[in-house]
Structure formats: C-alpha cells, structure tokens
Length: 224
Ligand code: AMP
Image (cartoon, rainbow, N blue to C red):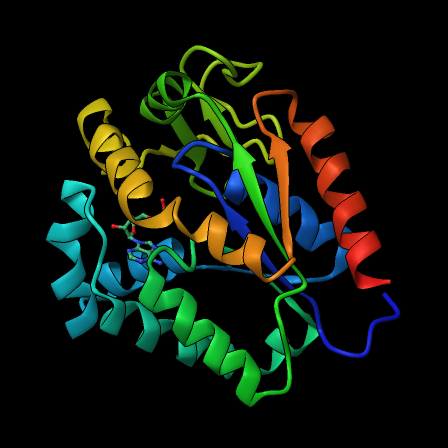
C-alpha cells in the first residue's frame, strides 16, 4: 500500500457477521495485523490475570466488558511493534466511550481511521450461525454444525488436526444477549463513523469470498 499512515480498519457488525474470518483474510492479503479484543480478553481469562478474572463472568453472560478493562488491554497491544504495519480492529470499538478513546489515541499518534466497515446481516441468521460454530484447536479453521462440517469426520480440512473447540459464549442464549448488546451499544457507532466520512456498508449475508472481495476493494481504494 502507498499510504503515508498505517491503515486502521474497523470491522463493525454483530456476533456471527464474519468479522474474525474476514480480518484473518485481510491479514493474509494486506499484511495488516488483526487486533481482536475478544481474543485478547479470552487470552486474559485463560491466563487468569486480574482483567481476565473480572471479564470472565461478563463474557459468559454475553454482556460487554468495562471500557476501562478493554481499553487497557487494547492500548497494551497497540504498543507492540507489529501494529505499525496497520491494524484491523475486530470487535473494537463497541461503545461510545471506546470510540472516543480510539479517536484520541489515533489523534495523539497523528493517525486516523482509514475505514469503518459495517458488515450488515440478518439477526435471526446470526443466532443460528453463532450457536453452531466451532474451530480447529490447532490452526483455527472455522466450521459449523449445519453449514460447514470437516470433509472427513473429525479431521480438520486445513491441517489434519483432530481436536476442535467451541467458545463458551457460542450458545443460542448468550448469542441473543450479545446481539442485544450490539444493537444497544455498538450499532450507534455506525452513525459516528458515517459523520466522519469513513463509513462503508457491506451486505454480509453472501458467500465469504464475495465479502472478502468487497472488503479488499475498500481497503485498496481507501489506502491509495
Ligand atoms: P468477540 O470475540 O468479539 O465476539 O467478543 C467476545 C466477548 O468479549 C463479547 O461478548 C464481550 O463480552 C467481550 N468483548 C470483546 N470485545 C469487547 C469490547 N470491545 N468491549 C466490551 N466487551 C468486549
């Protein structure tokens, strides 16, 4: 890419919209770094850090972890050297407070948001998508009980791994709570980025490759 500042791409969208899948594809294609606050929080929970201990029950209930905890974790990660290549923010910001903190952080570094992409999907389909998904424990390839089983029973298509895992919060009940949190606290950010002139919308109900193509065009055009 030829831009003078590293790209800062935000992926907005409810749980199940494909933010993580698309972020990983953009990482491979553009050399950007995926920064998922959900992944960072799950790592903190697994490591048993004070932030992880505080976040665990909120995440299990499908609520939003406090801005204070999320911002501390995000700022730590943003200080890592690889982030200078440009980032895809996956699942952040999720509240007004987080968006304001991100604006201030970027302004301090002389940067701005390259694009905020809203992945637009149907609520009912999201519950079904989220509640059936699982991943290869070795390489992270994503699968689904109804939509995408491994070709060989119990063996990952990509790496031949045989262990799979499901997120504790990928149940129908928790998915409904996460969707409510999205509509109440995160969807209003679409207007925030629209007002800044950086909003793009993509119909994210279609095939993964088609959505990746649309996102690739946005990154290419906005980074030129
Ligand atoms: P995700 O992996 O993005 O679906 O996030 C999983 C869970 O982590 C969410 O349901 C929240 O409980 C928590 N979480 C992730 N990112 C944030 C954020 N930016 N703000 C608050 N909570 C978050």
